[in-house]
Amino acid sequence: MIIGEIDHLAQISIGNELLSEALKWVAEHYKDNFEKGTTFIRDDKRIKVNAEIVAMLPQGKQMLEAHRQFIDIHVPISSEETIGWSSLKHLRNITQEYDSEKDIEFYGDEPQSFLTVYPGQCVIFFPEDAHAPNIGVGRHKKLCIKIAID
Image 1: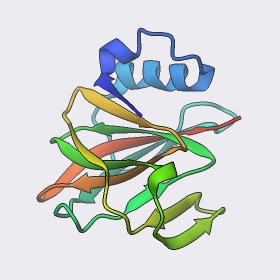
Image 2 (image 1 turned 180 degrees about the vertical axis):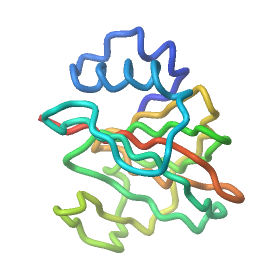
Image 3 (image 1 turned 30 degrees about the vertical axis):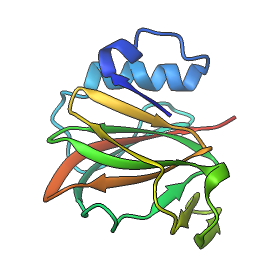
Image 4 (image 1 turned 90 degrees about the vertical axis):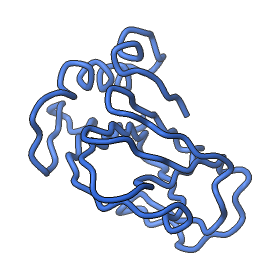
């Protein structure tokens, strides 16, 4: 997991061409007026941007999720977002087996830690990072960028 200011992360070399491209796109566009929906920022569809309006849940109600085929970048737009995090190697309680079509599995374990991400920041989750997004009160607007893993 990597968390930081969008403008700073877009300027450093991450070591993954698609991830670097996605971070540069986020830095150029995160202040745009997004409508809910999905956009591909590459013709090969390897970087997908989901603009979402999400109902947040109280801490303890959001399950940890993990992905195998994509890196996630979470970008809060309208308000801060708290996210639970755990290393996959410490999780034992699978509540929904891996679904390869949706690239997701869920865990009933408690997160090892929580972080709050503010507008102007983003957090990057790799396949070894389980995360419980959208913890808070009310609804918020965010971007979730999915980057295909080679």
